[in-house]
Length: 188
Ligand SMILES: [Zn+2]
Ligand SMILES: [Zn+2]
Image (cartoon, rainbow, N blue to C red):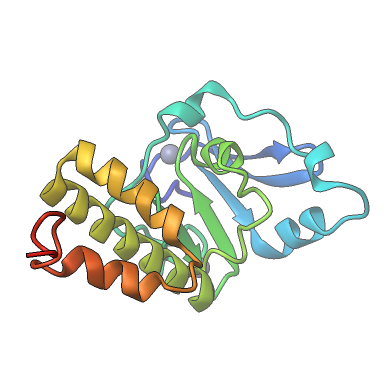
């Protein structure tokens, strides 16, 4: 079996975790995992955390193939799914063969983000939609911060928290946006 990432012939049967067999590329450290094997492992009795080893150091700087990969089993293009809103990393799936590909260090990266139990969720519509929503919230937050500058943004955030749930929140916001109610000008 050829490695979909580095095209070498060095894919060997191995283990991602105790009890989790897969194929591991001896050249680029990428790994191919059957989703069915993964589900059996993830839903085996007992706490999953007890079966997940500490993430390796490579989790700090995992590789992420940008190009579309061909499934090493059926040669069709694999589909990429972003793993979370705060990371651009994508996992590659072949649903025909029910396999997922981790680039070198990506499995450890997933573990370091507490997502080792989410491999099958990541490719779902609901997960992907949540990521897009969070990414768009983060974008507007950054836009506001850039407009206000860090100091005012930080005070505005505190104030926002302060008035959250206040019964007259709308009145407070109306007061802030009213230009003619500044102290000293109201009693004239
Ligand atoms: Zn490889
Ligand atoms: Zn395939």
